[in-house]
Length: 476
Image (cartoon, rainbow, N blue to C red; front, side, top):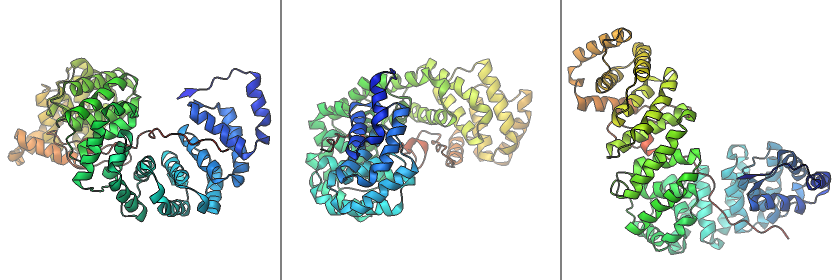
């Protein structure tokens, strides 16, 4: 997103002097023009525009209100609660006058903005109006609405979703690659199980229009790869190559968040037919890891843990990360170790083992300190797991800070000798990592690299940036 620069010129001053006199059409057209050109209004202008919008929403026509909501979502501007309140009130007053595209744009805008601040009655009114208009929607609107409802967490059993799914079944061949990606994402997200012929038609259509995958946004690309893998589909070589090539083309410009999501998806995809046998996929995985490694110092604890989980899965599938890249991630984990939970510590050390991290004096000292700190609260499974990791990392428990841990490990092995095997260690590790931490912390992957439902490696990626949508024309 480009940013408007304050030139201090007469044009900005003229706009500011006249905002308070603008009609609803003037307010909407101005916001729409910013969204259409991809320019973010400067804060001082946006503040005045939103104030004027709040005063005039009561006079917005259906095209103006839908265009206004679409524009706010497109420039990622979250309106105030007071503005949302008058938007809801205006829609409920005039909801019977809205057409399919207008309702679709409003639902999409809600999915991009803050859905929790909208009234339940407003959402129900939107769904009720959309239900009456499903038959008039084209393929782009059906896919967009399915994606939006899935992102909002709407139940698949609602009447509106049922109608949209039935409609999509009848237009499978009409979906473009970006639209097909949105539909597949919605199917997975809402746990809808469409018939195989429908899915085959979607994938075949994407393959026939493989060149159109270049139009996929970064978010839609990651979704498409993730959805195809989750649905158990095997894209033909042409589509597989197109998706990976599209990812390679954009990899140098991916945002921090997109890179992390892409890498997490690749950890799932890698061992499928899209992955380990594909040189481009290996190249993309290596390139993504290298870019993440360059910004490793900025990773949060949750992001570092997610990377470790993904690397465990990738290494189990045969991927060999570059030593310098995993060492950069290890350095970041060293900084985060003092605040890690026992479960996280187990996962991180497992990743160190899988990736053959270079054990420096600093890293060894940090691991010893972290294990010593965690010892009093370790469970049996965690003791076995950490003992196994330490031995693989060639860190002896003879160090004085580890005396308590060594004693606890000896008692554990003596009391449960059956746990003292590599196979059972992995099972114990998997059992320990099955605990899903709350509060936004990611789940942990299995120790043996197998994808487990509900673990990090199969964790649904967060809702992506909104898929590109053709902007509605400004109100006449």
